[in-house]
Length: 185
Image (cartoon, rainbow, N blue to C red; front, side):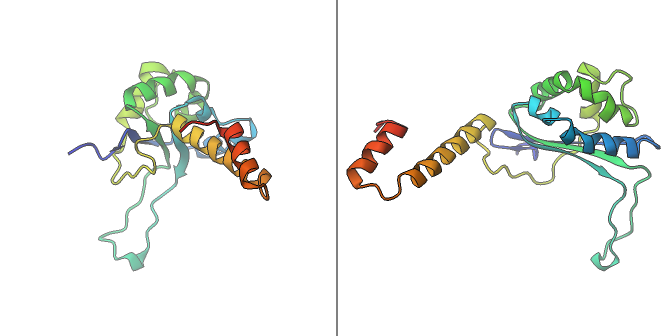
C-alpha cells in the first residue's frame, strides 16, 4: 500500500505548527497582507497546484456530533497545506529557498522554528511538523501543473474561437479552425 499523501504523481503536504503566544495577530495580519503586496509568494513554486495557510485557534466542538469528549488546543496553530507535483523532498528544498524572504514572518512566529528559518533547518522543521493526509484525491493525479495550465489555455483559446466563428459556413469554419489550431490529424 502506498502513502496516503500520494495520488498519482501528486503529493499532499500538511504541516501544523504551533503559533507563539502573542504572535497570532501579527501572523494573521501578515498572511492577509500577502495578497495586497502582490502575487502570492507561493506562485514562486511552479509545482504547486494549490496551497494555503490557515490559523486554527481551537477545535470546533459541537455537542450534537456525539464526540467521545470535547477537545481543545492549548495554542493557535498555523496549518500550511500544498498539493504539489512530484516528491516532497525536492519541493521542500524549493520552498525553503524561494520563500526564504517570507519564512521569518510566517514560520518564524511559530514555536520551535529555527532562528534562521530557511534551507535545511526550515525543511527539517516542516517535516517534523508534517501531518499525514487521511484521504487525498487529486482531481488530475497524473497531470502536472504545466499540463493543467496548458489545457486551460487551450480551453480559453477554443472558447474565443467558438465565439468568433459563430455563423460561419462549414468550409470557412473548417479553414478558420485549421488556421487557428493546426492541421494535425
